[in-house]
Image (cartoon, rainbow, N blue to C red; front, top):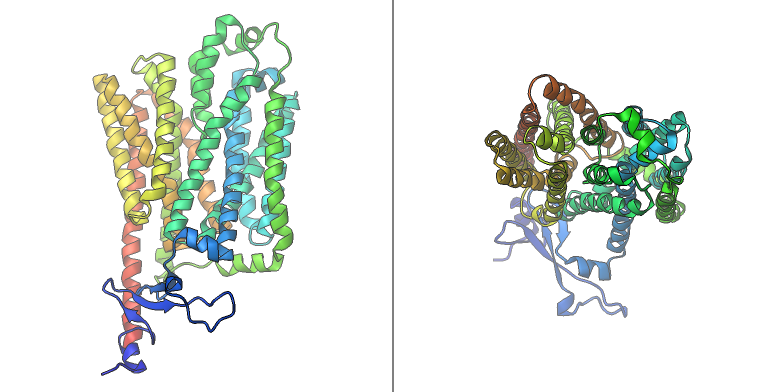
Length: 533
């Protein structure tokens, strides 16, 4: 006896859909002939549409290559993915130049290391200010125009920095660079999560995006090095160690720079006057001019997208998407917003502190040489890059909250292992422990963004700004606290602080996991009630 349409609806399916063994509904997907035939497809043109019982959203099961061949929309997504990644690489590239160029900037402005810390402080203050600014303007301005302006301003400011001989101008230039970078960061984050959406491809793309940022940050110091001032022979070894420790990662931070510089030079007031004695003017402007030119080139495709897109359409899309996901009470959703803010601050503080103070900890507590300590820091950031590259494939196999919880727990295990090996003065254990921390650390942030975008609220404008402001807030406060604890109590507070922050991050991810379960149960209950009525 054949089933009628009524039978289909009783089983919770739509007419014409076939229930598969995996619990999904399938229907044939027919593609018309290009020659305008009768619409009857060849056998090889038949695809299957998979409809999830939970979401009810059809998904065509095609490979990416097949979609690129037949879908103009997919090809456009791929182009946008490349352009957004290029913009993020510009941000990583210019940020990666700060470390190796730091000493030349001191020479240009005639300041010492202590005063030069204002460059980095103003840069990160600008990043926070830029993130806040972008949160207010992102829904009111065409997103491609934001890309054009922020990239262009960022590139121009980078080109001007080597010519700022006055200290105040240098601080102001880094502040403006940070503001434009903060606006660009929000635009990149908001656009990156929307290109492929909350899908496996979207999760993989976020990992690839983070990896591209790290790669550009690692390559930038090598491109900058030929244009740096050459030191006197007696100080050449110090400079090489300093530069290596400053540029080990694209995440070059203020605390990292100041920690390593303090290790190499004790008399900062005399250093500036003797280190570059009898040298010619700095050629740093060449490296920065190249970076400026690359940034302006990257901005050109966004100009094209701006003129081809409808400004009103882009704004409407953003305004209609700023809604929480699911039907849970608003109190739970706002509490979860606080939770993700705490997580963002804690994990970034741990990340920046671990990379920034690791060299100082190894030299002062473990009595390593500065070169070995710098090499260990390089291993950490290369391990982080490996984690991000591996995450491109891992995110297809695990859910975001499960993967993040596993990564946080692995970080805790690695940090505890490093503490134990530090107490035992086991050098080999230290090397293995930092790898155990670095690899999962590279996965956490992109997976976190995926979870927020899929389970809590779409990451647009103010949401992206909120996450970046909280992350930079944690990164700026932690160096002061860790430095005070290490100086006044024990150097082991480096390990204690990182373990505490990783523990806080794990608790936050556990709360995300509980929230996800509650959200899924509420959706299942809602679906059952709908079927009854």
